[in-house]
Image (cartoon, rainbow, N blue to C red):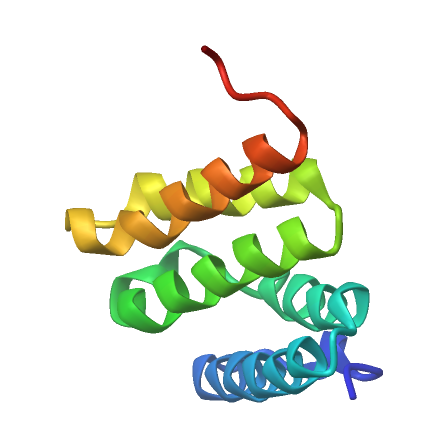
Amino acid sequence: MNSSIELVESEADIIELLRLNLQAAAKAQHASAYPLAFEYLRVAYQKVDDRLWEGHCELLLKYCQVACEVAFLAGKQEEMENFAAVVLERSHHLLEKIPIYETQVQAAIARNDMAA
């Protein structure tokens, strides 16, 4: 699906790529193929820059929220934290941060890293 990603340059094409990869990741996640789902999200996110954040913040926040959750499910702790940091930095409302906090708590529980 992403074999010619380097050819995608226009903003409209990048947004379409992100939407398609988000859909593909959702299908892979539904099939419990978490590493594959994360790979879809990781590859497409490489095309994101500050210019896209200015005009497509809502889509990109959702994208990063999903990437954070899928990274956790795929056992990719560092990548989970990276996507979490993006959402926490870029979100404007507490409600946008809640899914990240939930994922971070689940990850801490999975690591048995809950402070008493």
